[in-house]
Image (spheres, rainbow, N blue to C red):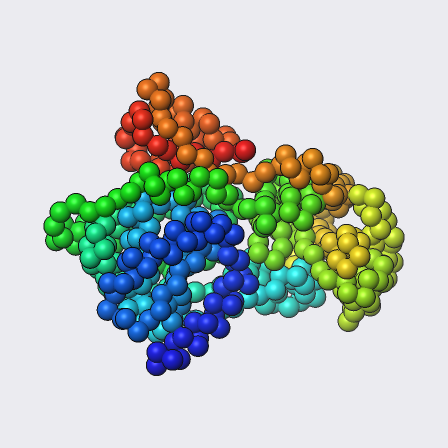
Amino acid sequence: MSPQQEVKVGAQEHENVIQQFGIYDNPALAAYVNQVGQKVAQYTERSDVRYQFFVVDSPITNAFALPGGYIYVSRGLLALANSEAELAGVLGHEAGHITGRHSAERYSTGVVTSLGAAVIAAALGSDTASQALGVGSDLLLKSYSRGQEHEADSLGIRYLARSGYDTKAMTWFLTNLQADSALQGKLAGRDSQGASYFSTHPATSERISKTVSEANSHQGQGRVNRDGYLKMLSGMPFGDSAAQGFVRGQDFYHTKMGFTFKVPDGFHLVNQPNAVVATSKSGAVVLFDMAGNKQGVDAATYLGQTWMKDQPINGIERVKVGGMNAASAGFQGRVNGQPMNIRLVAIEWKPDTIARFQIAIPANASQVLLEDLKRTTYSFRNLSASERQSIQPYKLRIVTAAVSDSVASLARKMPFDDYQEERFRVLNGLNPNEGIQPGRQYKIVSSR
Ligand SMILES: [Zn+2]
């Protein structure tokens, strides 16, 4: 690819990234990340590239680069890093992929699958749709080769040295990334799906040992700036943000749009970019999304003539959900080879927007499950103004450890009931035996 082509491809894909993830709206943090990125990027070997750095509004730990100098870090990655030097290492690594022209060789166009019609289409026998159900929708980023990873690490360390940062920061971050991955494995079943740092940047243990020896080849101690970095993170949403809606146990809240619903116990809720999906061991699937209704037709007309346009459907029933007009209909189909009863519910949420449930229920489902799922539909309601104020996504807070504090006491401040201490250690880059130091600052996750 010529530099001109790189810029063109990058600009196009940049639009996809923004559509897919959104940019995290925090001008001060954006300016800071860009400033750290520019500091590092001025020492790259490609002065023809105009580097730009962005924070994407994603809770998943990830960083990636596009041809033409576009470099992204997620909120999730920023939350995991523990100093400006570590951030500089990540940005330098990504700049290294651009310098080495790795991204230009390896980047594959974004594949965005629409989940909207997935349950219906799956029920009607489309294979790609049933795959989409499991996979979710995300940008498909190809992973780099091991050689490219090592080259990007070396270049990143070189840029750290040239810009005066501590070259050991690359190792610190990779070590913490590995600990985070182990923790996510333990939390499996409830971790978010989609492209993560590991799917795009493989082979971490090997990278850690190589970065240790490479960092040692650079002399002296560079800048770390831990406190200044942590200060920038204070108040940043942790996990899904209000703009994306978030899961709390069996409830889904969208405080920005102003609605909520609840799924039955035993269902696992996942917030995907275009839909909220709940699955259970019974095989039942609940998929919730929003769809435009520009003509402003009523729910029954929408269900029969827009949603199920090509599939004549009988027995549309008019109901009320959360005080709103709604319509419901059912039909039989197969999902993943299993006979299912599909229940569709369309709710007139706003004059031009329909809230939709697609519920796939195994044909042999118990009466209890049927009742539970009925309650899910009827649990959909608008949030009150005071609920929109009081129900908040989790945020990062920075606390100073007191003499009486311990890992356990700080970990207890976080709103998690499992793996509390391990989550705290990973969040703060502490190894399994490391204690905390009084007077030092630490990140905690806070529900307020
Ligand atoms: Zn990489």
